[in-house]
Image (cartoon, rainbow, N blue to C red):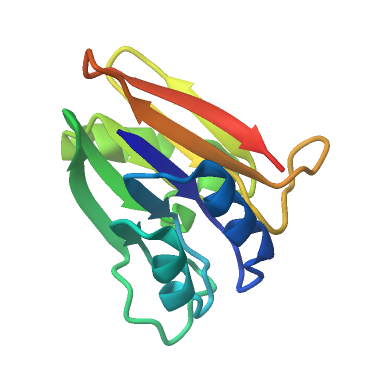
Length: 159
């Protein structure tokens, strides 16, 4: 199973459309928020099921603030992250994820990609396809693959 994870596209969708075509076929698309009204375009271009949540810039949107669902054997929590102080680090969001009993938390907001794997928790952030803030400032996303043995592998990719 191949999952494409993106965030913080901020209604500038050229890079999003480029990576969707590059990574197809995909089985699931996850958007961590700040689509700013591009939800329909994001869903249509994906050509697969989509999970998308509300970001701090998604004004007047009816998107869910957070979602919990399963990917393979991973109980997953999706949130933009701004309510969990992710700009200061990911300890608070991982603590909340543990209290919810999830295995995987996916969040955005920081515009910096992260794959943080611990024994009992995986925290990932795809960064931003539009306004990257990490060293080198290259637009980023994550491809998650569930292998035949049921284990997930994560790869940060750049444009």
